[in-house]
Image 1 (cartoon, one colour):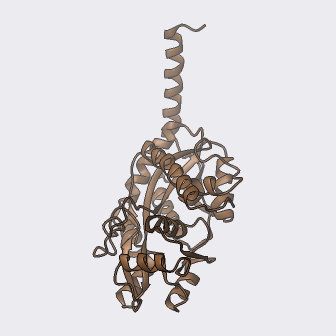
Image 2: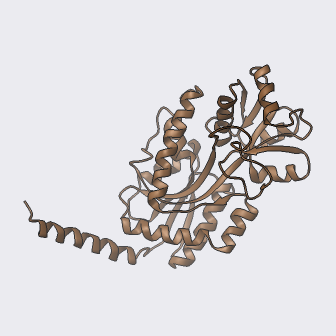
Image 3: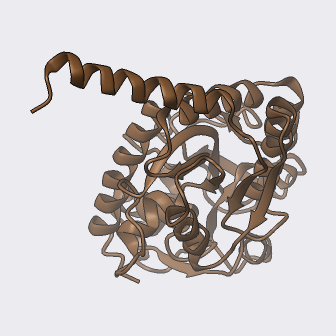
Length: 323
């Protein structure tokens, strides 16, 4: 058995080597895997961040799109990659906090297979109807849903999408049965809402704002606990009377489990700095309609664990079948 001083010396040497190695990091290009197609919300954020990290570290942070399985293909690839800091996952929350509790089989463990690095962005949904809809407020919408079980249809980007889960939480909070119509993307769902085929929708703030400002859509409330910067006059669902209602999605960076702590901390520091740069804020908040939310790696890890429990409970209570 090693003596206490000897064990301490080994531990200290290991920490010193890790810190020294992190100081030389990165010594080559870093791959940032985006588990979605190019051009989407998460891809734009990742490329914006990657450019800032390239400037900060003087090494290329290269975006690699690996879409499929609601983000699961890219997430699995990173989970199986070497934990050396040279392969990172730049993702929205779905593959990490929804897929593991929605799908019967997911080829990675969201907690054990990743080292959370930094949360970067939060984006909300807004409950909208056609401007000429007969619902003056959320209370009217709830009353109509209760009076006609299953008659009010709402669209989403697909089963397990953030706006689907927001709709399910709304149904539970309202004590009403709603008709969920899944689409292959938000554009098709929004088109049907504008065409009168849907009663309402939880749409992303950024895509709804032009229609709200032009008078084609009516906004009732945003889905998160805080108001949206792009719609400061619109209350939250909680302010509108839906107690504890809080559905939003985050975007953040994760590394494979086992990535040296010093590397995670260095990445976190640079990512947080990058996200608060004026040009990044312009693109993400002003142009993109999202909110910048950052913190420590530990806070990000805590958020992931909490949301896994939150979505598992929602999926169970809403009787959403395992996919």
